Image (tube, rainbow, N blue to C red):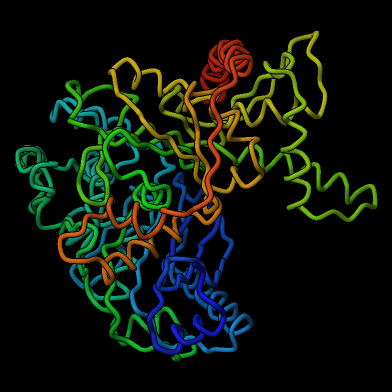
Length: 535
């Protein structure tokens, strides 16, 4: 039963609520939950990455000011809803986009601007490491960025004393601790699921490799310490409290859970941490996560990344760099057109209207196809993104087909990548959709079910995102019973009575999507040719 407003006020004043903050690619979101893990307040800060000197990045000032702005927005929401100035927290956790590269010197100075997961500048490093480890190392992984910097002889390399992810950076600002959740760490360097730590043999091989390049440091001295969900990863320091709350109202001292990646928080937010469960997290990027019963026999399949759950169990991940960005650009164009015609429209309502219109479109989108690659798309062999929209001469260019096609395209690379997962014989009992694209009921959900030819469930919290998942992780840390697993906690104390809707794949939708996907593959060849011509 949901808490009353008076009960929530009492929990707020008693410092018994848990806070999760997640750095998304277009929004930093803060979600506060009560003792029953229900969201009670939300804060946001919108931002956007920039292409600077050939790298997708966010300035360090944005990293610092953005999280404070999201917290200030949440604090104002608490005050407006409950008349309480937020001063105390029961627990706190921060999460962020996985992977990327944040190297620091011995004094804690950032040596180069943050290089995000979106960069595809590490092809040589990723290929060499994949051969060395006999294990697929994606271009976006932190170790690929580190080794590419070594290969390129970048000036900062000898000065590196530590490196981490964005979540790890924010956590260190809050607590002073250089640690990561095993889930986020598994996107930096391969993890041994037996030890829940970095793979010792691969660490040794990497150290020998970089030593041959004249590097003095060792990887184990640079990497964050690995923790699992439920561990206390430090406490909010006075400096961390001031970093988060510029007003100075927030008290220090609350426990902080391990900093997590957005894949891990997506698993928590969809109750997908048990074997044979999976989820699809869709935003600027899109990825599917399937918890494995055992490690894959072939660890070198290029479409499959092997990462872990927040407790260290093996996960097969299919990650695609592009999902909703092209949709957003087209919707922004249509909103701009409305304004040019003197019609003031609400963008949220425009999204809802257009998404619902997609359900009226033809199953194969009527001869329209696009490659919505704002950035490189490794699954499709694309290094640089040039978004394309094509149509057959006899295509039916209607708004319904137009919107259906773009939602189909948002899942196109994911559908291609998941074919490799099916070939590995991976079994899935439950697949959950998660992210803002699922806010409009049934639209993206039904198209995703067709794309993957699998039932897709969307929960009432699907739009809350990873910030809510990390708030739940923080709550688990302080509320779990002795020996209680994360899976049991989620089943019994978070999702037991939660509203959810499951859609089976419609055979006509599946047939239409398969026909469209054949065009998508052909269009991708044009995409790659354009890339060659534009180089």
